[in-house]
Amino acid sequence: YYELLLEFFIKIKDKDLLKKLEKIVGENSVLSNGKEKLRFDHIWKTDIPTNAFAVIFPKSTKQISEIMKLCYLNNQKVVIQGGLTNLVGSTETKKSDLVISLDKMNKIEEIDTKSRTMTVQSGVVLEDALTAADEKKLMLPLNFGAKGSAQIGGIVSTNAGGLRVLRFGMTRNLILGLEAVLSNGEIISSMKKITKDNSGYDIKQLFIGSEGTLGIISKVIFKLEEKPTSRFSALVALEDYDNVIDLLKFMQKGLSGSLSGFELIWGETYKTMRDSSPEYSSLLDTNFKYYVIIESLGSDAKAELERLSDLIYQAMEKNIAEDALLAQNDRELKMIWNLREDVSVLAKKSKFDQHFDISLPIPVIEKEVNIAIRKLNKLSYVDNIFVFGHLADGNIHFIIGKSENDKEKTKKINEIIYKNLKKNLGSVSAEHGIGRDKKEYLNTSRSKSEINLMIKLKKTLDPMNILNSGRII
Image (cartoon, rainbow, N blue to C red; front, top):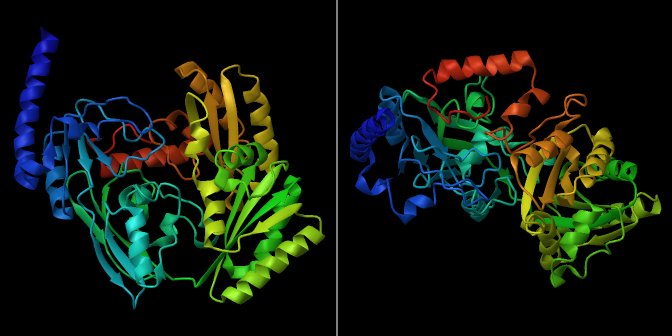
């Protein structure tokens, strides 16, 4: 009787709250049932329904503020959703949760060509922002596989990395201004277009990378770069990890400021990707241990091509590289990068897959990857082990294919990958965040005092614990 009575009162409360929410955003901007709602009731890459009681679609910072004031007064927990491509369980919801979807906050408000800045709402899809900058002969230097669905709010709140961190840094390095809404509805606005501002604490940094646990990011000002007039890429094969490091140093010195990408692919991963489509048949053979994709962005096409070509030739003469392919046109360039970015090919090789995103100091990467591979190969339910990553910033990804999928087996694989992170001063999450799935491993990367400070920040900015509750800590 108690449970039935409780459920009855919860339904009454939910209906009352829904009516008040509809007054803020309009009836057409709240979903509480129907097939359309199911799109927001899931954990990415699974068919698990999570059944939040409603999804609301604000169209402005003011509406987010009004929603949060109401939720704060009603102790209503909210889950903020963007492009739903999160890999650490952050989109998971409970029946008692309200989902705030930022889909309708999708305006590019301004591109200021004089200050080279872009002001965007948090629901803007990254690819749309990239296209808009490109049309103004400018470049937003964010680039990763999920750019067609990932939204700016999610990208900023997870401090996403990607393929050009080597040259331009993580997302936080590209942000000049930011606007966010606190759990009580208060708007914190730091929407400045200036690079230098040492007037006290840099408040916007609190929200960048905090995964929506401290506030809801509503707007961002990005700094843009002048659009490069040349882009060249090469695929290089190597047999020795020390040579991979030597190639990185050699290219950083030779290409100076134009080196923008240095992606490492392990041999088995490369072979699986290359064999997945006939379009890759003209690429390098699959009999080498390592493959590196190099990208150079510059302003003098002829000079850049000659310089990259000469450096690759020198690397082979010095016995650093075994073989190489320099993309001669846009088709070949696109082919090389498609091979690196289309990781869904790897995930589909097994019935179940587990993804990892760790950071390690560059000198220990080969040793630690080999240790992990040896241990994983002893597990009967592990089908495939694919390794690749952004070597220049120490970020390595694993995609591990499995024939079975239960909590015990998932935990065993986690322990293998994360075992030596603390000893090597690495990170359990290089760019995907902590979310729900990595919480118990946060202590591999953060000290007790750091975690305690995170808890204090959370309690200060979200005392009711209603913003993305249960994420990170």
